[in-house]
Each structure stands twice: as structure tokens, then as C-alpha cells.
Image 1 (cartoon, rainbow, N blue to C red):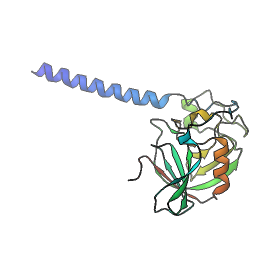
Image 2: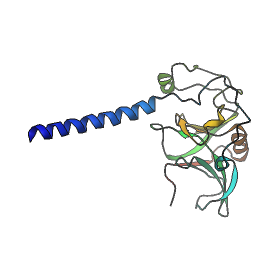
Image 3: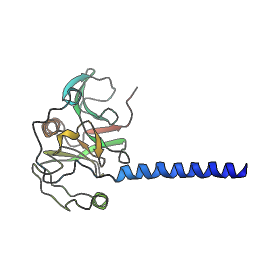
Image 4: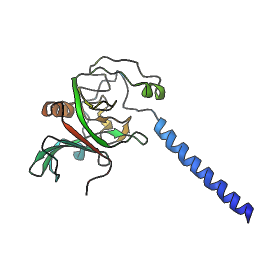
Length: 198
């Protein structure tokens, strides 16, 4: 009986270790969207669900608020009267998801990119600095979220929209991020949610 309990306990510990290693391995996978120098293919056609569109959206948040639903892979810009402008986005992969309430602290056109040390540790092939331009993984525009390393930005890989692949930032196709950039000021409230609001 003791040997059976010990064997069961060892199996449980081994299974928990395997689950932890799988989670850690998925968090260590390279971000295929970060391909410095890759010029975006503007002919990529997004699935209809991820194309920019006006939608019915019930919320108590004020017009001009950004609500990011990572589970749905959508960013909503609240318009009021039960409507929002919805954009398709790419979100953080397993191990790089988060939620919270922030404000847009800065905006930049064709931003330079300096990958944070944590990203360099995971992906040592990345450049330490890259000037803004079409081949920059941040794309055409970036809106910085508070004092964090996270941003809402464009991408040089539009085929990653609708996926969970980034290191925690939210990416839009360049035409959509340029549209959003023009619509919101610094100080805009941003709500990041993991689960849809009921």
C-alpha cells in the first residue's frame, strides 16, 4: 500500500513538473513576429472578424476609452451610444498575458525599437537597437502604456493579427494602428481584460 501511494505521489510530481516545463517552454518560444528588417506584406487580407469595423458594444466606459479583450483578440475604441470601433489585434502568448488599467503615456510615429533586457535574454539574436521604418517590428506607430515596457503598435508581420504570439504588447496592422493613433490623445484610458465582460 505504501509503495502504491509513493508511486502515485511520484507520478503526480512528475506530471506537475512536465506541465511546468511545457508552460516554461511555451514562454521561451521565439516571437516570430519580431523579425527585424522584414518588410510587411501589405497584400495580406485579414479575416473579416479582425478587420476594422464599427460594432455594437455595451459598456459604461466613456467615449474615447480603449478596451483590449485579449481572449477575443480585439481592441475596442469606445464611441458612445452602445458602439465601438473594433480592431483585430495580436496579443501576448502564454506566459506573456496580463491585465490592468493604464493610460497612453507617449505616442510615436515610425518608432525606434530598443528591445528590453528580458527580451534580449530570451531572444539573443535581436538587435539592441533598430531605427524606425517599414522593417521595424513596431511598425508605423506606437502608443506606450504607462511606465511599462508594453505598447500598442503596428507590425511588420500582419499575418500575426488574431494570434497570441507577442511578448505582451498588442499589435495591429499598420493601417489600423495609424488610424487609431490619429483618434486618441496621450492620456487615453486603456483597460486590458483577459476575459470578456459579462
